[in-house]
Amino acid sequence: MKLWRKLLAAVTAGTICLGSIGAMLSVSAETELDSSAVSENSTEVKASKGAHTHYYGELASSSDGCAGWYFYCVGNNGVNYDMMGDPIADKYAINNGFVPNALDTASGWVWLGTNPPTITTTKVTTKTTTKMTTKTTTTTTQPSVPTVKEGSLDKGDIDGSGSLDSTDVFYSMLYIANTAVGNTVKISKEQITAADVDESSSVDATDVYYLMYYIALHGVGVNVSWDNVLAK
Image (cartoon, rainbow, N blue to C red):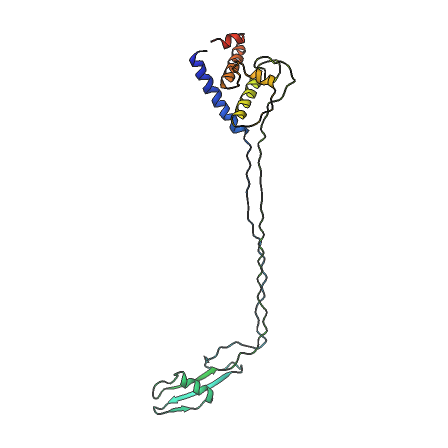
């Protein structure tokens, strides 16, 4: 066979075979999705009726009626202190510097009591996280070469249909592509012999070229024989 035919055979069949490999691969995709379902349960903290919360040393201009308020009224005369309010409250005012300078005076209410009891409930927050995993598998079914009944097959008639056409070309390329990537192909010895049109003891791109060339010539009315096509 001329050199240009060999080059064309390798390029043509090689390109087609690479395309076939992509179509035959099985694709599996696994996606994990995390979804959180959160539930929250809470209860307000409530004080008992009529109760107010105050802090020690809190100051006010008037009492709100809660036990624990003490009235202070003190004056600094420069020598000692004049105390006209509750002794405990006056002492607190003096000790905390309410009248630091001579002639200073101060009066008001200070809370020195204990907070009344309150009825409380504990705020409970419950969070439940549920992890959901979704697996999606997409599979592309790999076509296979149909096995024909045992017996001799005409050269190139891989599917045993009695005629040479594009189906035989496809099955020849499919066999070559699968073999190239290490896939096991169920095909009979008779089919392999039919696919090995140049009788080189292997099915390769050259056989695909010869098969396509033979079919093309007969398609345009040139009834050549295999001997003519394979003639070197």
